[in-house]
Image (cartoon, rainbow, N blue to C red):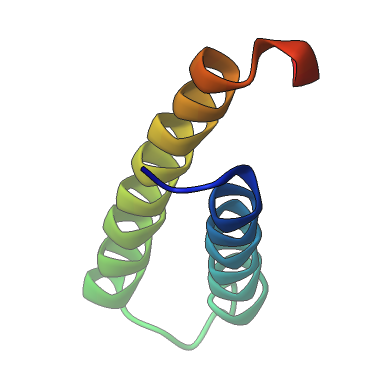
Length: 64
């Protein structure tokens, strides 16, 4: 089992990846395929984020 510190670090890393994708991929020069790939990646990252946040809330109810 991962510790709270490890889970929070993973959450921070995923949130950073999402922010980078949103900030760097909002240009008008990229094609629709690139935008769809970015959206799919962000969706996958958000799913991972939700799973980790649920684990944190389940394992550490005092923090919620």
